[in-house]
Amino acid sequence: MIEDNFVVAEERGNAGLITLNRPKALNALSLSMVRDITAALLKWRDQADIQLVAIRGMGKAADGSFQPFGSFCAGGDIRFFHQAALAGDPALEDFFTEEYSLNHLIHTYPKPYIALMDGICMGGGMGISGHLAKNSVRIVTERTKMAMPETNIGLFPDVGGGYFLSRCANSQPGVGEYLALTGHMLHAPEAVSLGLADVQVSSDQLAALWESLGKQANADRNALLKTITINSVAPRADSMPASSTFLSKIGDSFNHPTALAITQALEARSDDWAKETAATLRKRSPLMLEVTLQLIRRARSMSLADDLRLERDLVRHCFHTKHLQRSGASSETVEGIRALAVDKDHSPKWNPEKLEDITLEMIAPFFASPWPVEAHPLRSLV
Image (cartoon, rainbow, N blue to C red; front, side, top):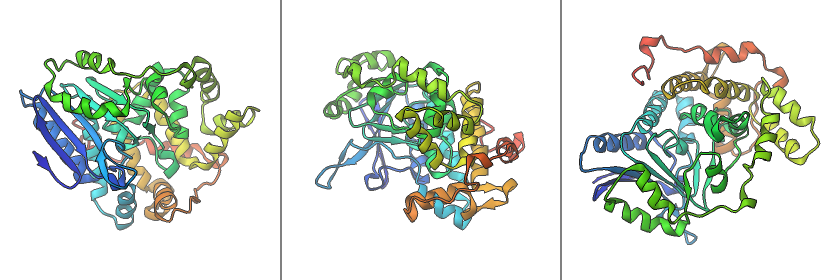
């Protein structure tokens, strides 16, 4: 068994089992956690007696004690991002290179990859949840809270978010854009209906399911999914906001060429959903809304490897926005994290302040790689 403070990796029967063990921080990913998960997956990939892998997170009970399940992963450790950016710590570069490499490893993993997304599953948690995996079984519960809320901190939906958000709901127009720009939180029925989860089970079934994984006689993904589906929860029709009517409404509003045009289209409508959605967009970083929209549109026709390379370019520009003469505390991302998680005043000072002030010259350089092709940190991904 490999064990450190925050990741426990163990072998049980024919299963490799990973537990994220940082419940006080909602299992937010550190660089060491990324490395430990990667090491376990690489070891088990080539180990014949391990036929499947699974991942879960430790949670916190009502009495304050810690227990398996209840919280999957809230994303990357944004406090570390803030500190490292201000200090010029090169570990920040390592984190994103190694995290995105892990996302790609999961996508190409040859064995079934089972993610038990109980509780919070956001940001970087989505990247390790099997949304990118060809052999994944993605399990949600009545406690699942799923989102890609990066625009709230002046970032963009990374960890392959451009790839999997652009393809959710069978790539219906506007849906990926809506989730990426607003950071809308999904519950289990929505996640399943949009194709971001495979099956919903009751949280009280998770412990027994976890114990049974090492005893599977056949570790084929389809057989596993069929077994798990026996105990699945059928969502009620009235709990399915991802209906054709709702998706059509999203498509009508989020199919415009810019975030400004999307916001203005919403503001021109009279229904409450449109007004509330527009108000949400007006609170986000105008600069990063436009960058995010272009990412989703471009990634829709990209391979995951190319999308991750693009996202690696973008995240470098987010912390070192040279074409706007910004870095450190002056970057949108560091300011967003400060407002949300450090000072917690929830009043970020975006620059520019309004979508109306964004120009093409501000957006286009984000999509120019800071590295030549042969020196890109993710050049080996295929």
